[in-house]
Length: 638
Image 1 (cartoon, helix red, strand yellow):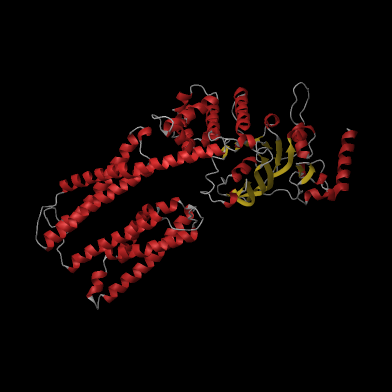
Image 2 (tube, one colour; image 1 turned 30 degrees about the vertical axis):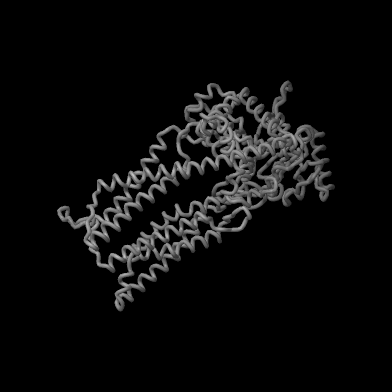
């Protein structure tokens, strides 16, 4: 029974902690795992201490009656909170990075105030119930054993009904806030804070009168001022809740929210002023993304899939890099690895992804959110699986603005007296759809993904990717399932985005025709490796790597008649059991001795042009020349 009571108390404490620790965790750079670990360790320690004390008090109760009196769940709940919160703060500081402006790890003031409030409240409650036992004040049952037995206690029942009325009142406020139009809804933080104040005051007011009037005056001193009535309770608690809710809303939380909004507007306007000439003055040679030795494996039941092996490339400001290769070579895995979107059984084994001077792979999933979706966005290959089927497409586009462009929406809405950030987000979303040449954007905005064609869904996803005018756009085959006319519109839109915002683009495709139109540089992938990386014109006119030569020679040329297109012999290797050395060597006509045993180095053959092939390695110059002569003789004999 002691264990059950302690576990129930800990469960109640856990839910209280979720509310109390919210201000602390808002400024915390902690993952969910670290948060859960802090709570779990604190609860385990408290559980062990409380059970040990309760069993000790139970044993000492045989000798001193005071220990029987203290062996009470309310008393131990107070002890529990007194031990728990200092422990929880300690582990939060140990596992998290709770920082203020000067980067020192500090507990948040609101957390300290709320934890003190809970500790004091639990001790007041414990002392009240201890006084009942000490003064021998009569108590009945919470629920009568028999419906005809009137011995149930209105004092205990009053707490229960007051608590339930507060919950009902809060639920009604939430429902009303959901029903009204989105422009008139209260912000989530303002609403929750106002409800919390209203709930504490209304429950506290009724509880105080119960203790003073019913417990002490009526039962202890025999002075009955009035009878406790359930109908009076419901009306009184509700009225106090509404008054407290509205007063705190009007006098404290809405003014605070307005003041905060004005600060955000001023800061955003100042930021725009400071960065007005950023786009024009941005240096073309600045490296915006530097991927170094990126390695990703998938641990399947059949074996380890070596999806990416030491992938390295750079993307400069305003540059378009095309990532091209056969299906299954690792193009999409590269994009997902950059943004830490690889899911089990996949795992990023090593490498660095430098976004400016930030290593994205040193950040947790929470820390990377400011970059992901705002500064770096990705257009996924499959629009059907990328869009949420239960939300209208307009809601999904506006969500991007509301998450990543809330400050800009606030600035824009401040210029109009009759517009909220939601109406501005709707206008921006419809304007974006109009820029994508989507007919009737107002109608499409209010439709679900299943009501649209595949090409239309793809354009909606592209609109979500372009919404924040990102500095880096990762486009994973964005023109899939679109006809030629729409393809040209999308490609033109991306070019305009690049020109207007100096946006860098990582363009993933297997279509060399699109690569030739869009890209400044091209990186060719084969079986998890980048085999050639350099200037687009140089790559298409005179490629170095045998695989790149095979890809380009297999493209049909308009106006040139051929009986058969050239093909690359052999099959793409199984990445669970990849070939040793160069992974292309089983299909390469230039293969010579080190190709089947040593992985090629990334060799710089021209300025900013790299090839991973032994043919261009100075260490194997003589062997490479023999191989080239052998192939030339073979073709000359034909």
